[in-house]
Length: 80
Image (tube, rainbow, N blue to C red; front, side, top):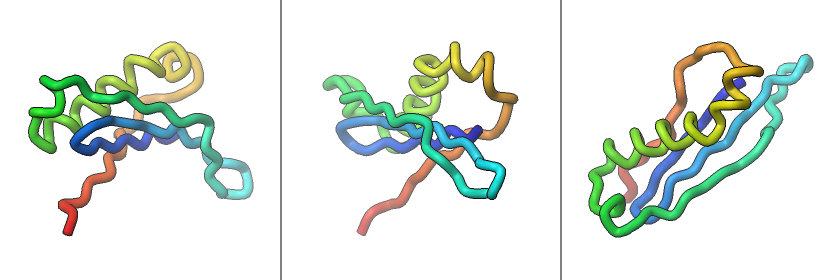
């Protein structure tokens, strides 16, 4: 299982991925959350951390049963 997260100025999101026997990766589900006014003032690092924490919290029951501990993956680009 892989949990990929991302954050932008107005929302955070995640996708839970599962590696298949043929080495392809299949999405299990997608989740997103609109940020409130206070969260929109977070800097980029804080929003990325929020995405990880929020994702783990909402998927905790699933991750606790089906996944082993691993390093979360965040997607961040500085934009152009």
